[in-house]
Image 1 (cartoon, helix red, strand yellow):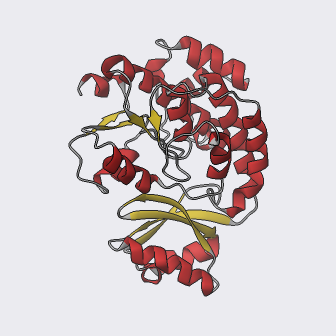
Image 2 (cartoon, helix red, strand yellow):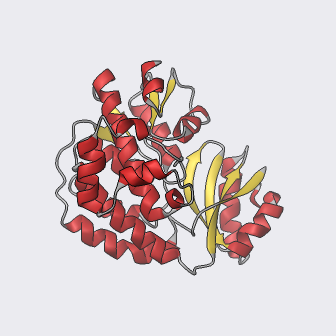
Length: 298
């Protein structure tokens, strides 16, 4: 399982620069015309929160930790990623190349950022012990004129909503309107995975049109519908991921039902996807691989 934007940390992956100089220095710079090494070593927290920096950075580091994991354990039976992380899964599975994934991510990130600029929108995590009621409340609030969307279905206790600042602020102060325990605003540039970013789809479709997808070496369930990758429509589904909900909770429960894996591994900075699994299913084992030390202790 590979994380998305928001999991970035200052200096993450510095230990990988000497192991993967071709990928993280040479190929990265050739694809994007800026130096990842400089960003890693500068340790500028503000710099790595920028969408155009954070997304390629998270992808590249997660990809290399994925390579290290495959060296130790072999290929996984199944992989998934959260939003941006879907491209990490696809690249590691060799559906697309590392450099092609970088190109898509760069265009996608810039287009999404442009779409939310001056939109007056933001996102918030919603914590609930009765998620079905919370989801139903979103529809009821929309009828009342509080326009919000569900951007992420993360786990059995959490969704992420998006909408205008004033509506998110109202719900933060009135979580009961959502049948929720808490509404926690997120530090993001705008309402991603919602109709606000629909204008970004055109740029994503155009870059995907020139990318070659090949049969992969392991299964991947996709964000937009929690179904397996199909080369006949994978580009369409990746484009639709931009403004549709990320169905991560459904991906987890579908994999548990269809594959019954013994171990789930979060691979990349942070540990967020591991927490989503813990809150969604009774699993036999959950590991976190976000450093070489963590890989060696599993």
